[in-house]
Amino acid sequence: MKPINVGLLGIGTVGGGTYTVLKRNAEEITRRAGRPIRITTVADKNLELARSVAAGDEVKLSDDAFAVVADPEVDIVVELIGGYGIARELVLKAIENGKHVVTANKALLAVHGNEIFAAAQKKGVMVAFEAAVAGGIPIIKALREGLSANRIQWLAGIINGTTNFILSEMRDKGLPFAEVLKEAQALGYAEADPTFDIEGVDAAHKATIMSAIAFGIPMQFDKAYVEGITKLQAVDIAYAEQLGYRIKLLGIARRRDEGVELRVHPTLIPEKRLIANVEGAMNAVLVQGDAVGATLYYGKGAGAEPTASAVIADLVDVTRLHTADPEHRVPHLAFQPDQMQDVAVLPIDEVVTSYYLRLRVEDKPGVLADITRILADSQISIDAMIQKEPAEGEAQTDIIMLTHQTVEKNANAAIAKIEALPVVQGKVTRLRLENL
Ligand code: HSE
Image (cartoon, rainbow, N blue to C red; front, side, top):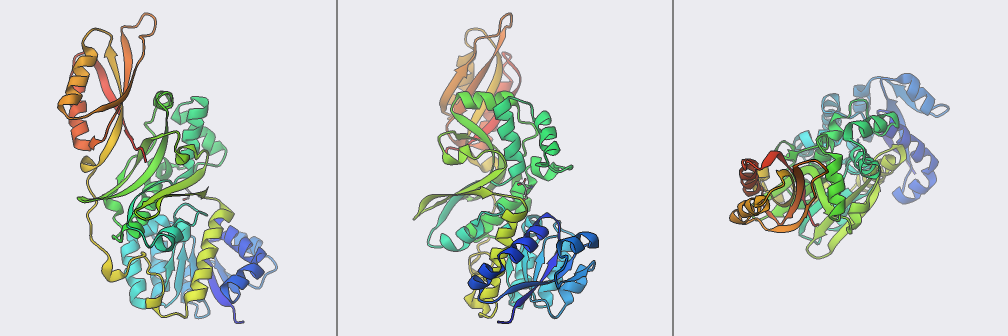
C-alpha cells in the first residue's frame, strides 16, 4: 500500500525519538494505520545531527524547513521546532499548502491556536497536538473523544515535570528551592534557562489548551493566571505535610456559572488523593465529568520516546482520516467550530478556592482571637490550625491556618486586615488549597 509521506521539522530530542520509534515499530504502526507512515524529509539547522539519526536510510535531509512545507510529496508536516516565531510561520504555510500538521508545540497553540485552527478549518486540514500536553499521556484523546458524553466540570493537572521534580526534592530533602533547581539543572531535568517551567508558563500553555477542548472555548492564554514555584518556601511544604497535604504546581481549569477559572499556581492538595502522590518528573491530569465522575491520567510528560508516542499516535490518526470529509473528522478543539462559546476567563480576584495561611505573630493573649475575628467578619471559616510553641528565647511564633472556600478578593481583604494588626510580623504567606 502507498505510504503516507511525512516531513519532519526538527530532529532534536522529540524529533529523534519520533524517528526512532516510527522505524522500530513500523510494522505494528502500519497494521494500525492501514498503510506505512514514512518520513521522507527531515529538516534541521543541524544537518550533522540529522545525518547521524537518519544514517543509512533513504531520507532527504535539508536545513530549509520552508522547502519541506512546500514539498508536493509531503502529506503531513510534523513541527517539532518549538517557540512562537518561525514555527508559527511554518505551520501556517504548511496549512496554506494543504498539508496536515502534527505538532508538540504548546506555546504556539496556546498563544496562536485560534488563528491556526481557523486557518486549518478553512483549508480542510487536520492539526493534531496530542504531544503538546503531558507528553506521552493521551489526555487530548481522552478529553476530545473519550469523555465526549460529559459536561466536563473541571480539570487539574501536574503538567510540568521539571517543577514536580523540584517540589518532590524540596519535600523529600527539606531543601530550599534555589538549591534543588541547581541539582535539577545538573541532572538535566531543568533547562539552562528554566524560566518557562519554574514560573508556571509552560503549565499555563498546557492548561489553556486543555480548557479549550474541555469546555469548547477559544484559547485564552493571555487571561490565564500564572504563578510559579520560585517563591515557595521549604517551611510551607513541611507545615502542609504536617496538616496532611502536599504542595503541587497545578494547572486548573474550572467551569463556573460566572465564567471559567484558568490558573496555574502552587496548590495544597490532600495527600490521600492519588494525584498528590505523583512524584518526580511524572505528570498527571485529573478530569471531573458529570457522568463519569473523576478520571485520572498518569505518565511521562516529557522525554524523547514518551513524547514520540503521542506524535506518532497523531500520525496514525491523520493517516486513517485524511481521506475522510473534514466534517466527519473529530473537530480540532473537540466541539464543532460553530458551537464554540466565548466564555470569559475570570480574573484571579473572582476565583473561589481555599487557603493556607502562615503568620508570624507575637505570643501573647488575644492574638488568635483578633485574627479569627477578622476571618469570621469576612465569612471565612477555618478548617484546621496549628500554633507552634515559640522557640527557646523567642517571643514570636508561627500560626498556620487552613480555610474553607472563599472568593479570592475576600481572602485578600481579610489578609490585608490581619497584616495590619500590630501583633502580626511582616507579610502573611498565602497559598491556595484545592480538595479536588
Ligand atoms: N518542560 C516540560 C516539563 C516538558 O518540564 O514538563 C515539555 O513540555
